[in-house]
Image (cartoon, rainbow, N blue to C red; front, top):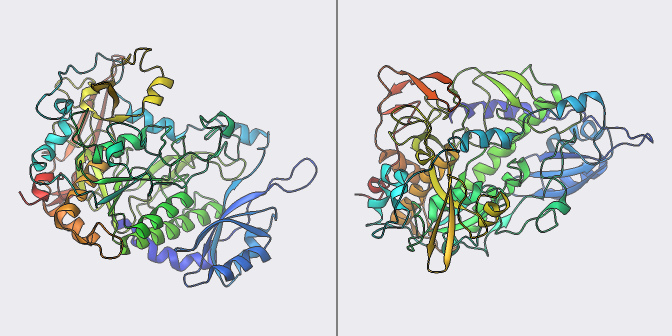
Length: 575
């Protein structure tokens, strides 16, 4: 997270260089396609003054977050960005997307072949499927599926529950693809009243690549989902990892008595865009959320660079705006008592080194824009994980080794947490039971054919548990997306244990910096491997053997694989 010292320099550049002309698309009749922009107001500027400037340049405010000064604006003026650049109330403007039909030119057609971000994530998170699945018996002493939760044992969460299970006055925000609030192992701790969906479905990008698909194809037939729905499954897995209750059904979360608030910032497709993220973070600060989990990066850029020569001036402007706007929202949440926890990423790279990014931009904001290979200096940042005030979390496997897919870096990783590693086995072969097990929406299991007409799983990675006539489903996933919520759960236990009553908003509250200090200070120290160049071997089902080597830098007190150590729930609550 230390790389965001670049923000100070970036902020100084923003006002002068953030605005560039958008590439508006002429239609067959010669008119101009409507284009959507993200506009950043100058700090201290009134919303009224900024809106006047936007309207004078030919724009219409679609949505605005006045707390941090970020607006979504539409315009048919091809020169809108240039016209707005000199306005005293505006710090920057960048294209967000083109609205309407995408062109059929060859450049746009080629761009359609870019791999989707969701597909890349699922490739890692769903690795290990297709085998026999783990053998298990229903645990009658603890939660029924406790024997499958090796991750809880690694961080001593099961032992910590004897002393602290969390406080319902502690709110944990899930910035993700949504939360299935009706899931039997989530519903008891789910706050529907406070939950919000900050997204609107986006059918396609500027090249015609499908994102969320036509709104009429959505289960509810609209572009806006309810605040208790997850049509992806990712957010539901995250939520139950943190706060599934102890109720003799399925699993237990790390903090089984805290309250879950759905702060949906992710699309059905798994994309995460700037405005929903900003809105979710400021709302979290306003309602008294204590901890948020962010298991994603903000699209379309895996890494945001202020002045990378590999990017066009338009793209550079967009990335500078994303850095500035995201940091404003994070600063706001942090100042309002929110502890921010984020996944370190599944790219298996050292974020503190020069890297190659071959997956950005993964969403076309103007026609013809396509994914390409970029050299990324260490000054570029992945958001939100590398923002200031954010706790970045790497992933461990069952043996406590850093997972083969987990990104790393000395000074980037704050702590480590179990997220699964299906190749962390004696023979380096796949075992889905070495991923992590958490809640799965029944509706998705049905839609995907993963349970039969009797409600029984048909695949190795889905587990069913019933208490009387109430049945619930769970799925195995691995990733830093799974590691981060377990660290967030420990943070929630810390607030529950040491927080003070919030006189203004009710519940508990605690200084995020103190939460972070306790989380790091009570983590179990983990030294670099010896030798520090660790080679991962993966024997694939095809018979192919894949090896990769990651180099760990630092000491047991702090290093690039584990940061300050593996989070420990028992130690965190003072035992």
